[in-house]
Image (tube, rainbow, N blue to C red; front, side):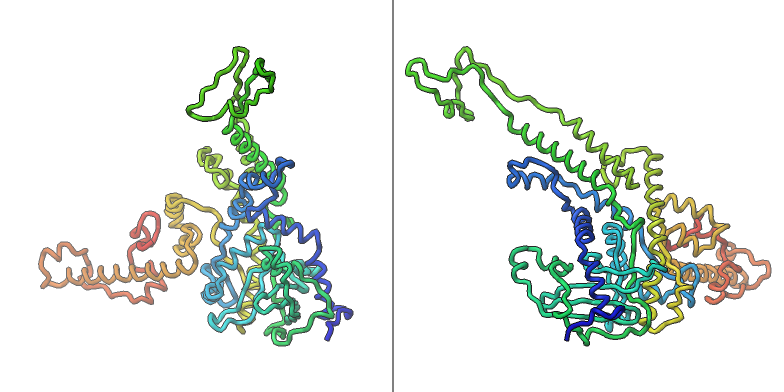
Length: 526
């Protein structure tokens, strides 16, 4: 039965509308161009057109993948570490949210989402049904080449509808997944692509990305087994959009091309110099005795035992060496320019950048930190939406309250242990221990909770040992050597031993002071 595409707002109407957007030629070309740059497959730099086929392999060697470095410099510093919810809003976040994040494998999903967003200007995350094996919802990172969403004009952070297309080669089936608030509609058709698969080695990835799949409502059928209502009325897809809707390196493609072009010229010159050109001037063309034209092809042989006999009028010439310093300096200048305009530390793009001054390195790192903080701010609410959808799928509406959900991030600054220790020692009297562990030492909320428990155990043990030692000193039967080593106890009696609850509720009451566990204020086990 054909799918109805005429009724406005119907699933068929949305499929047709979003399919047009997904297959928009300019959008598709733009995404593939950005993907190719990020994957290290940018356009070949201009070279010898007359010998294109022979020169193409040589051109490929001149390309450098700076685009991936620009993206990874930011994405590697974007690390969600927890969430605050209505059930648990302290500094370490909700332990249940951290458990869901771990079971759903969101550490990898978040990294893939950030990489796609930063390189392709946007990415999507789908929150599906509960996975029976993990007990958490199935959450996947989606490529904008295979998926498109239409934002609500009144609230661009929320989608009205989203569409994903794929080709299942094992089942020889094309499928369309339409996501609407509270509903998923799947349409499918049986389809083989033998011609394309045989002609193009990478045909299956291309088919899975939507290329070659077109929407004709007469050839598609709704799949009732895969379609259905969701356990909530929210949109199960969240869009992540980069600043200004462009990739991190998209506005600098010309600069990337210029670097590759200069590298190609250096390679051409160096290769040509490996085969020096030689010439002989003043050689006679005709043999004076026979009057025949002289064939020099067998005379000037490049053999270690060859001996050339030249007439007095002959002069030898050999091409000289070209200095490559200028081209090398030009490439370095272009890379430095790229680092400046993308706010990427020089040492990440070029190993020689480690030799820059300490102040210059600090300033370049500062620019990267500011840029990363901006990207964190742009994705924080999106991850809160993802976690809210996950809790709704798990039947926990109290934790799904978006007004109370906050995303916790690891600091984008990467400080040395010496810098962290110095900051922690100066914050002993002003910042609580748990906050120091998270915000200064950089531990995750879960690790900070574990360390606080271990620290409380250490404090309890220290107090019990002190009390037992004081009791021995007060006992008249204790040998003098032990009594003299024990601390003085004016009351003459052993103090009461604190319980674990006492230590956890008031760790500093009657126990060794803050400075007893290290000048930096670090737990003894850290």
